[in-house]
Image (cartoon, rainbow, N blue to C red):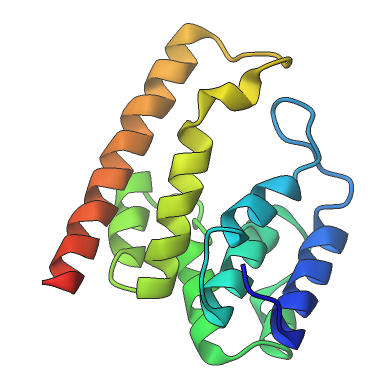
Length: 152
């Protein structure tokens, strides 16, 4: 993660927006976007990682964020916000063409697939874990293929 005035603003927004949320293990939710941001190496992907769940999971809107962040970040956030009714893998395919959204989603999937996060917390039932693994592996394959094509 890099620190700039813009990434600092994104960090504050993420912290405030997710303040009362916890993940499935009871850990403060803001650690998830922070973990993703730690893996990013430029301002746009860092901001996007920090804000990637803000629109989907809080009352903050893209319009709110557009007042403070450039269009490339807003475009990536729009793609990362899973719209109700859209099949999950269609959503992943749609965001795969955007390099910022793709980088953040790849990190998001890897973190979501890390089952060591359940240590000390309530682990989901085995069938739910299996469904998640299958879904996340399929999504990651789509993103890895898009990344490979982008670097060829």
